[in-house]
Image (cartoon, rainbow, N blue to C red; front, side, top):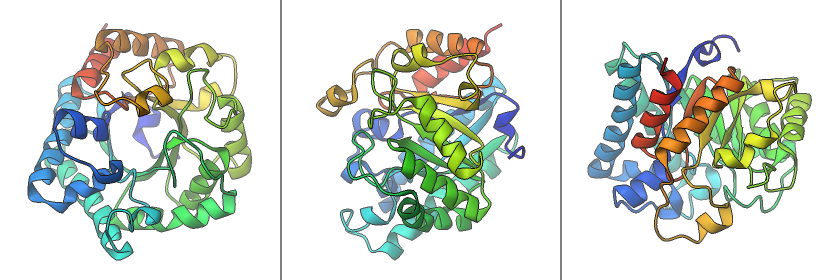
Length: 307
């Protein structure tokens, strides 16, 4: 998928949208679903301002920006818990892409890619019931189709915890002819929550999809959790094109139990990102995940782009 500009130049993306909105902005997110921000003009204004911060940063730093839609927890199973019909949830998915298209038009000088975000069917930390790839494809095809129809340039499967679900989303994107990035989450030992090695997961998805994903990412983990498993000489490591790290060094279980946000050390996080991209220059998309906000991504951008 050579049409994606982030394959050839440095791009930023946003931070931990849900944790930023919930803890820093004080806005409740039922079931941790940011698509609920479209329910009121006030919360929508907060979301709009959130994206503008990263667009302003990308403009200042002279980078591109992957605009990730606020749809991580907006697939069909979440309609009922959110008190919505499937048609209403579909409209919110469409509105999430529409917001990004409007911002791209306004920031026409910033190279921007609109990414339709798809989260796991269940929990982002716990794999729960593991679907077969065909079941995962059938399930995620609905949201993928809505995001594609609304005008997403690509899809991103964020916080993937299992190989079969990642395969299913990749095949759903393939059926639509849209590029897709697959982002796995790992535990403190660098392995998926299922115990699979990250390299094995990437190789398995590539084998099952004829290398369809445009690139892979790692997200929802601190660099100390995965830096040691990355092998510069391994073919699978060359497939990693982005990192969206957590601010905290804590495990998923520890983070799940916390009632206050752990923002970690932005300067240390930034330095670790610079070291990563120096070792692995194919990592061209950087942003943040849980606990991060504009401060962290600013520090990362400044560190990575410093002479």
